[in-house]
Amino acid sequence: MAGLCFEFSEEQRMLEDSVVRWAYDWLEPQMEHMYEIDEMPADLFKQTAGLGINGIVFEEKYGGTAMGYVETTLAYESIARVSNALSMTVGASQTLCFDNFRRNATEEQKMEVLPKSVSGEWIGCLGITEPNAGSDAMSLATRAEKKGDKYIVNGSKIFITNAPVADFFTFYAKTEPEKGPHGISAFFVKLDEVKGKGFTCEKIKKWGMRTSPTGLLTFEDMEVPEDQLIGGLNKGVAVLTSGLCTERITLCGCTLGSQRRCLEDSLRYAKERVQFKKPIASFQLIQGKLADMYCDYKASRWMAYSAASYCDSLENKTGGKGTDLDRVSAAALLYCGEKGTKIGLDAVQIHGGYGYCQEYAVTRHFLDQKLWEIGAGTSEVRRIIIARELMRDDFASGR
Ligand SMILES: Cc1cc2nc3c(=O)[nH]c(=O)nc-3n(C[C@H](O)[C@H](O)[C@H](O)COP(=O)(O)OP(=O)(O)OC[C@H]3O[C@@H](n4cnc5c(N)ncnc54)[C@H](O)[C@@H]3O)c2cc1C
Image 1 (cartoon, helix red, strand yellow):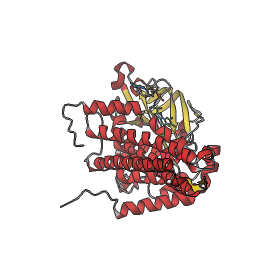
Image 2: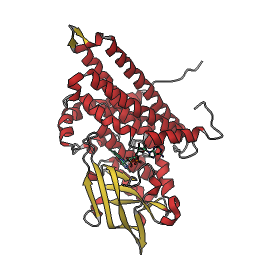
Image 3: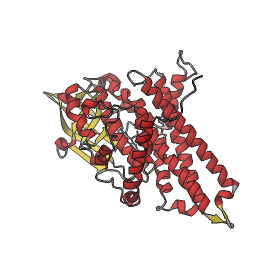
Image 4: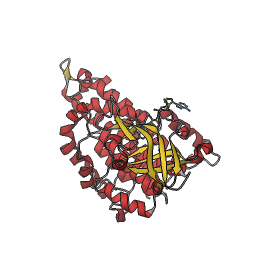
């Protein structure tokens, strides 16, 4: 009788081993300092290119390795065992920006852009959120007005991961505002062509996710050639939604890596730290926390990888409103995000006063984890999506 397979393949394990080894050897020694000065390691994307994870789902003709979203999530989990923030930075470039571009751009556009992302030459960023359009993304106010063979862009974007260091930027703007969501289009720009010419970026200071640079962008009569539209005029919502499910699923990897690290470090610390002449691991109140952390991590992993595996099984690997993948992916990130915060809090508690100081990795992981209840759609928005898809007439409770 065939059973359910809960194991990674040999190839997936090799990928995990190589990324984890690199993260501990190359990233770990720099993290405390980089977190303090809030700087991304300069060679990060060249390094991830060397690991073969920049174009992990891209077809080989673009230089990619043609793997799936399970492998992407696993790569992000492996980086996040050392840095949740840098795993998010890699995900923002490779999944949010370049993978969604791959889904929607023309062949000519892809041949020009994707190999540069795979090699690590270009870092990408994606701009949806605006100061007055967060959860209600469709109310965005950035305007792109056609003048001859160009669009003139005015407006702003906020909280854009990688913007301060990026080379390539995909974003959404209203091309026909009177049409509401049906008047939104997607564009790309090469940032060295617009810097100082109507484009400015200000780095935002954050208390968590440090090392992952975040920008506030302003566009004042920024010119974008008309052939830099992605997916056609007024097709922005289709472009945007085509990437949301894979974004939510793969970003679960960021929180999973931190969950695992918090559990491992807490276990080690609890066995070493002696109070009342005993290791604190011998106290049942500490054991209870460790047991809960383990269960939450195991359940989060199942939610994330079963969603990734389901996505990989679909022909077009895409979701959107009215699909099971929409519910499954929102549920995975909702669960991983909330459990991640709880595990981070427990890890700090087990480390006592030392957990409140910067030299322990659990402190960074705890600060980073909270983002996953906010970024990529908040927990509230994810619950709204899950409930909407549960109430569909054709909902079948098996998945
Ligand atoms: C570090 C970081 C990195 C980010 N990276 C990117 C990026 O690369 N690109 C990008 O485009 N965006 C990015 N974001 C933006 C992120 O996606 C938004 O912050 C998020 O979507 C929420 O929007 P908001 O912050 O405006 O909150 P709001 O939408 O103002 O929400 C405030 C609160 O109200 C709740 N709320 C809103 N509407 C409802 C409702 N209908 N029912 C119940 N509750 C509701 C929310 O859940 C939240 O708790 C990033 C954010 C951060 C902090």
